[in-house]
Amino acid sequence: MSTFVLRADEIQIYFEYPDITGDFYVAGTVFFPPGSVSAVDNIIVVDKTSGNEIASNIRVQEQWPDGSILSAEIIFASNIKKKTTYLVRYGNDVKRKKTFSEPAVLPTVSFITPGSGQTDEKMDVSVGQINVRIDRSAGIRYWWYVLPAFIFIFFTVLRSLRTIRMQKE
Image 1 (cartoon, helix red, strand yellow):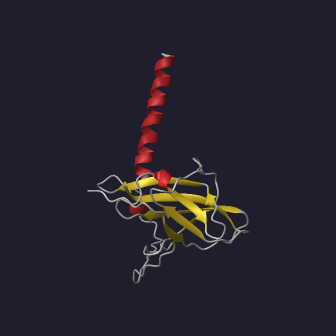
Image 2: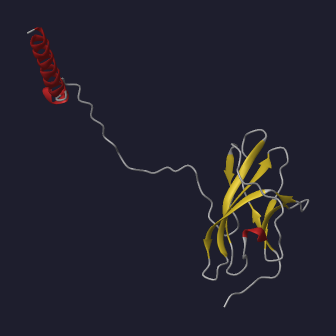
Image 3: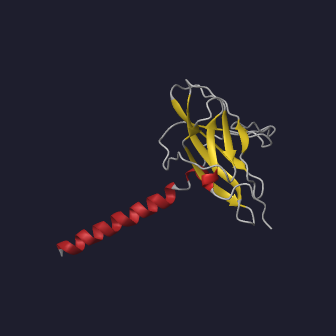
């Protein structure tokens, strides 16, 4: 039995504005309750202050057993000069009008939604003490690859001399 939500719900998007000038992309994954979104066209990104729809690229990542969307990757453009709050509005009464298919080459910032964990792009892992030993000796074991090279060159020269001698005869 599938459950359909007949009104629009909203999820606020949180991200940090980057230290760049101009346009950039905001990208992230949004998870939806079962039966709340039946198609990608029922998901839009809006500017919270003006209510205007923002052009977005939305791809389904996973679906619920009833065929509704479980998670979707959303990418939309923003500008550093116009700092605003964005919302993902979804539901069967929402109709998407503004899309783009191929994103341009712009910096991308990840967003999070309430209830999802924030990704950290830096990670420090303590691995304990690391001892590094540098052996500067010139022992034969450090030059093992030279012997096969000399043998190869020796037989190549020997064959070349033999070929030249046979051509003279």
